[in-house]
Image (tube, rainbow, N blue to C red; front, side, top):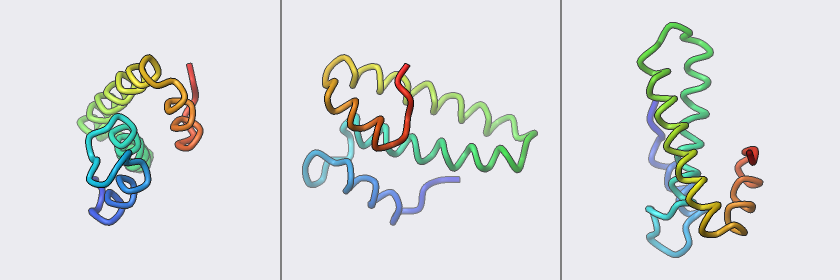
Length: 90
């Protein structure tokens, strides 16, 4: 259920602020969104996989905290990111 390295590198290169940037909020949020999408598809097939469901809820909470931080610090980047990822603003 992990991201393959090619897809991960593609996401990092798309959202990185500069070359070699893997830890910025934008990159982390984009990677978490991809992992959440993969886990959601998995849980639609395997409805009783409760350990994966718990992991999904943790990822959603982590992404929510990062989005809250990004919204408070760089609102213009936040708006661009949620539009690009297809997320809703609360």
